[in-house]
Length: 300
Length: 133
Image (cartoon, each protein chain N blue to C red):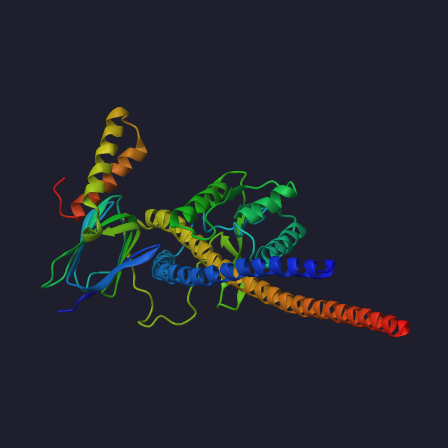
């Protein structure tokens, strides 16, 4: 067997095993998207209710003067929470995110605002560590299955830094929004100082009722606003988890397709080589036989 | 008589929703009972409280609710809990075990805030499950 033939066989075998791995990854990711989506849907009622409660409080107390809602006149420092994934094999997911984060950094710095990154996810942490960027906080190990406690950890760190005297003055969040299995968008949002997201549609039963508060409006706001921030971060984490799996599924699908295409090309090439070898062998045998026959007829 | 639309939600899932005649929860100011046509109110719930939802003929729905809020408006009651568990879902043996460990930790050092919180939570879980604590 020719050397080229052996080389091709080896190549095909290796590509085949790669295809098996990527195919398996694709299937795993597909089943995980469904779970991630379910978790996303399960978190919706809480977010809806808490948004309603915050809207209720804010619309009731005419002058909301809470540290978390007051924007500083000249913000000097900003925190940017970047939600990346822990593992790779998910195509451009992290690259897109980090590119957007860099763009935001550029924009803020052009306004004279110093940026401190807060990073969640091993990929983002590695990216910042490699560039010797100082991080305000880093969290790893839960990008695929974030729990509410993880969101709480992040929110606590951000709020603490926001409240500190020489801490950050505003907080932005760069994450991936899950639109559908095929579409995920990188979004940049400002979460603090708080802008309560109010629904644009008119409330169905007239204006919001006049609430009573237990114990007082200030106390309710004090404990409501951090919960609201946590809930926003939790939603972002869940969306990011679902998007990560969707990106991974897509990346693994195209990897499997490419591997199959390679196998096809190599198999064709291998058959050609084998056929060429056989043809050559036949012509050698025929040539040899003819030569022998000529020699025999020459003797007579 | 009008009924209350009640929803008990935690960040990770919707725990229960349905109709009820009366909702009793524990806020930082004390117990609050909500009946239909109650004035709109938003209250802060205590750590380790027990929520009771009275439903006409059916048995009461009891849940352990840890922190969060209750908001009432137009006969809709939402309980936003940081963590919550229905009485029927509580693993009684595990909760008792956790409570004992927490109490041991409190005896060891009085100012162990984590253990005190843990003890409160587990007491609430056991109460919700209908155990005497």
